Length: 178
Image (cartoon, rainbow, N blue to C red; front, side, top):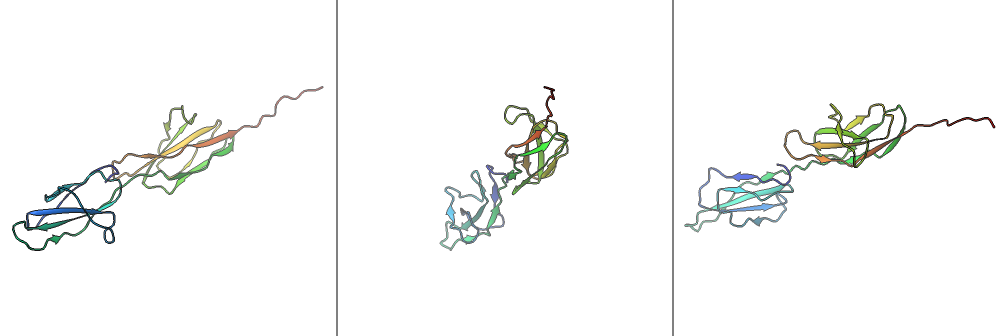
């Protein structure tokens, strides 16, 4: 599921009429915590921000038999992360720059460029679904960023930091005869 979402869990093929759902941050070594007022064969989790493990105890309230514990279910929480971007760089006018991200989480990328880092409007760079980008030939300083998301989930995308590609244009100046 996406970070900040809930999950619906249920059990089937059980016998009993009393349920106690539990959660833990670790499947085997974590401490299990009772989820209050969860006496139902279905559980809607609270909002999850990290991968969480669940299990349920089932017993018959009318008979004093020991409860039986279900198998553990893992609810994986996906959080897109744009990771670390290339450092700002300077190139010569008429050249291209190679930009990249690393340590990202996701599999769909949308690079964007702008003529201003904060006040400019960001434009999608067509068919740039790659963690690396070779810019077009540049004649002016341009800013870049990338959105990262998972194509299989409809989670919100994460936006990288802005990368500045400065364009250096040497000028010969004016020659005079004194």
